Image (cartoon, rainbow, N blue to C red):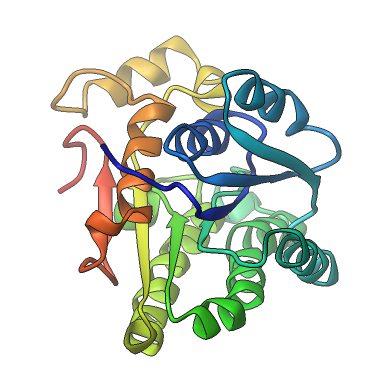
Length: 246
């Protein structure tokens, strides 16, 4: 049984889908979770966690607002004294063929998916360095590994997260901080449910395990990487894609 008792985790995009599942799983293993999302979106998930006996609190955060990120981290440190786990999960998609893609859609996806992860990571890095331990886990995507037509902005942002994590892992390993990436494949979330049945079927046919993944499939992997059992794993990309891409 993975034990995260006494650990403090900051999870971005924690209101629904993969982020909500990650927050629930970390709390179930004993972590105190700071669930960040826009507005009051994370409050329902936090209420569910607390109802089940977990420790969690909702914070309002626009991850593209760097000063707000720094303020949330500073506040969490003031209340908890430490941050042990960061999960960079917040992300958006604005799909379009390259020829038709508007610059603002490129900028928005890069800002939310990649630059915000930089801001959140940098904000927690100093306290983790002082602690001489920490877990930084970033949610990328199979699209960042294999590409996908109509998603050049999304693929670029998710591939960038992989490069960032691999470089940072080498920078901070000597201080006991691990940096890893989880790359989900097709996961059953609101985003994939918006696809047409034909599109979903086409994707499912590319998955050797024959099904879409669940948010819990991703959350379980994140929880392992956050634990002491994963202390010798860093700079890695863990694929959670049912064999879709190897």
